[in-house]
Amino acid sequence: MIQRGWWRVTKKGNKFQQPVRITLAIVLWAFILWVLTLGMPALVPIAKAIFIVAVLPTGLVEWLRYKGLVVGEKSAVPAKILLMIIAALLWYFVYR
Image 1 (cartoon, rainbow, N blue to C red):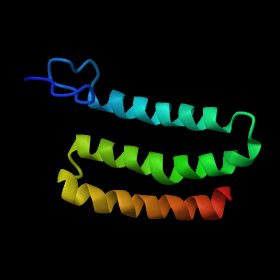
Image 2 (spheres, rainbow, N blue to C red; image 1 turned 45 degrees about the vertical axis):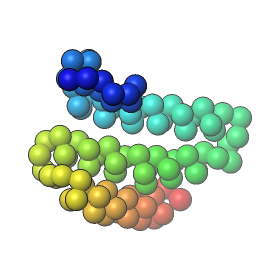
Image 3 (cartoon, one colour; image 1 turned 120 degrees about the vertical axis):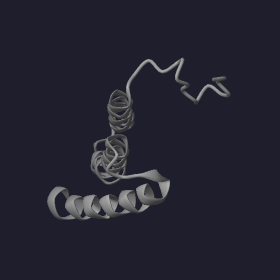
Image 4 (tube, rainbow, N blue to C red; image 1 turned 30 degrees about the horizontal axis):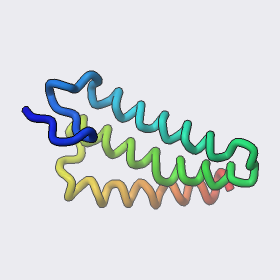
């Protein structure tokens, strides 16, 4: 398989399995949000909200797609939206 761009991972160039890549993406987002809040404590609640509402549900749906519980992009999008709504309610009532 020909690699068509730097953003694509081919079977030949795939060094990590899917769960490892999902975990690394979540950790990278956490690191980016942490760096953005250094020296600005007022941004910490916003960074927590972004992480809880956007990053974690997306990672969970990608993991469910890997396990085969969510099949295809058509069913993944509503699952992401539903989990984001649940996460937003959780953040609003628990972490706010």
